[in-house]
Length: 118
Image (cartoon, rainbow, N blue to C red; front, side, top):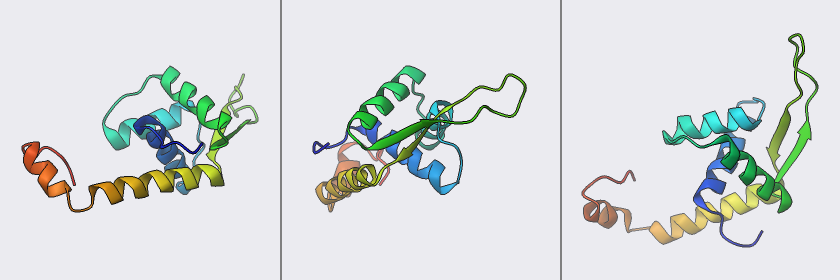
């Protein structure tokens, strides 16, 4: 995937990165909750899974089915992780944002009335 990642794609990849760092399982609900916690914005389950499928098709995310959970009638989960290509795409996207915003955030905050976090 050589194109620049969209904002929601970045959010999903960052959520995968955080869950990996925490050594937590990355599945639809945990990814969605991480995005909500980090951005204070809710995302629909459908949007998360649609984005994960697209990222998987582009080789930026791997997925597999877990063993059933321990409780009675435990369900299998579809788990996800960032691939090396996904990490590179996210890093490239962040670098582009940093390069474009360098020296401009103060001006942007002034234009936006101080409502932009830097």
